[in-house]
Image (cartoon, rainbow, N blue to C red; front, top):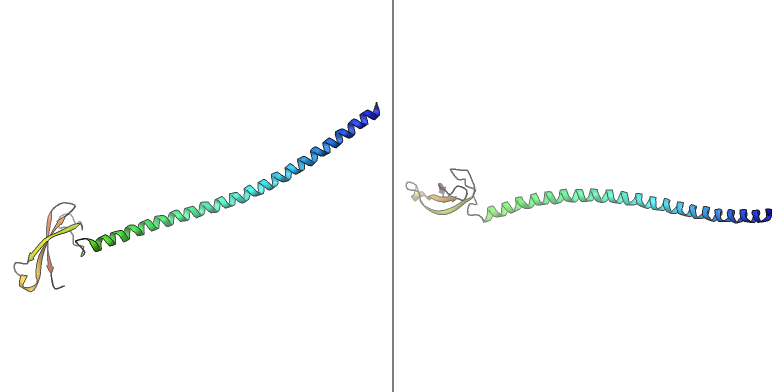
Length: 131
């Protein structure tokens, strides 16, 4: 009976050794996965910083684009000299005509009529046509 007990213990010892090897392999895999996870966390942080920088760059480009669009609009507007409405100070004026100044018309002075798009009132601005 003791021989059978010894055989049984030897078999159990062998299976324990096999389990021990499997556990060591699993431990190595876990360490490798943890290292990989750490690398991915670093990459994620770098990508988040890059996204933040790109978002701020997009915001700055949108502001610059808006300013350039306003500049282009002012070049194409009917009020390129940026005259202001006498009533509301808006620069959104449309030229509605002009006539020679009643006193200085012979010298090239013109009274230009503008209609404000904000308040719909008419402003008359005296212009020197020679300038």
